[in-house]
Image (cartoon, rainbow, N blue to C red; front, side, top):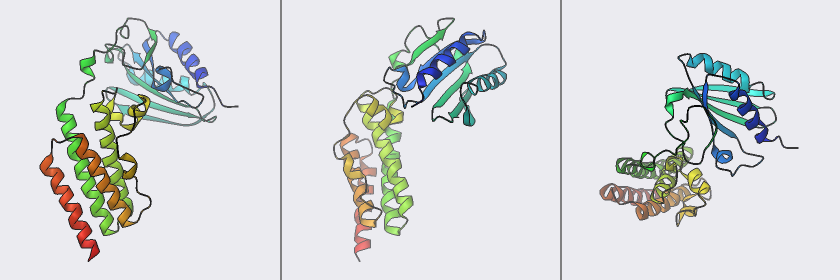
Length: 256
């Protein structure tokens, strides 16, 4: 029998309600937007009042570690707070952000307020705060072109895994651009946000996945990705042409 993540949600809610220093409890991810299932991880955040943020973080980790037998725990720095990951032995996972209460001044999209003592999560985050600015889009496109060129170069040199890594980086950025152009929530999450929105993949995207790690397959995939990217954005036309020229040169060099 699969362990139910909803049971973790209830235990976390009950615990937070008993802590006077927890100002709000937010549920995000698939469970937060009402699309969760038995395999969903629990993505949540708590807003802490007072100055003892590290102490409260440790209390929170201790509490959530008591919800079920634990396989492992990791605490990371996160903006002005901490990101705590708890993996339970039954396979469930909890991702808990512990932040100052004033970190939130609105409810993010696709999330639910499970506790909101002072109304910080009462209203949705204004749409303009979620928009991806043009400079960020230009940066994503620029980096995608560079990574495509790197993928082809590494492939011809015989560095197959480095080529695949660069190809994956470029593809991730293309997913981000595709999502941003279609107004998805959190386009920086790329394919995750696109699939959550139920959108199709960019035309030609399947061809950007190499059939194997042979040089020719990797270069073909990089070239296919360059075509997908060129259909999406045209902010860096000179750079795009230079990368396409580089790929042609690399093919020519390999054929000698």
